[in-house]
Length: 94
Image 1 (cartoon, rainbow, N blue to C red):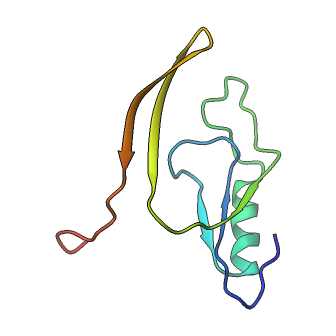
Image 2 (cartoon, rainbow, N blue to C red):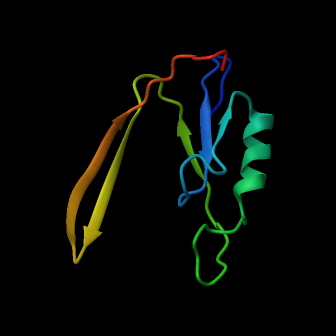
């Protein structure tokens, strides 16, 4: 990922994770390096063998409406259990 003076935001995260655990929003190369160092070789969530992350995922930050889809899988069949559209307006001073 190339970070230029255009101030693009970069998301650094493990390729396998839960929710926003170990997800970092970075605006410069120094913060990308710090996030990479934190994620790289960190424990893989739910790993029965105490695996560590050998890879780190970097993505360009995309602004806009955020959705979450909960899917249940069994024997290769998938069912959508829930679809959420996030509302990120501030409320109660938060």
